[in-house]
Image (tube, rainbow, N blue to C red):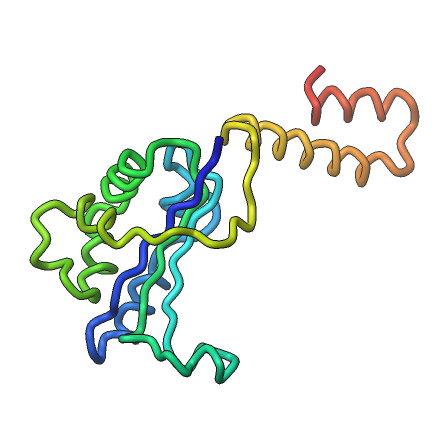
Length: 169
């Protein structure tokens, strides 16, 4: 069963641009630190400021400060996932969360993140399958798509050869 993890931390005064630069330096796609984390369906960081809020009614209560969200859909224990995330990030973890209130003073970084975990009100993407099952299905889907595109004008023999190359059976 998957679960949502959302960590919400206040960004220190005047550090939004540096934080956004630190996040922008993190690789994307298959090179993303989220891509190699066990049990991770997806993950992301977002910096939210008052200027990012589209409707005035959301601004009425105000944000106490610009906020950093780190969120993920996972199918392992949240503390285990956060520990693996920090390990995968290495020094990058500090380059990101050092712009957040309390990070520098926190002796236990996993405990710091867990203390800033908030309830996820909207689960936008969940699966009832483990990550590896989802990844295998996506690989098979890409192979089927390639087969469909490449086989448009193939003879029977060419189609069988393409099928064996792409699908592997």
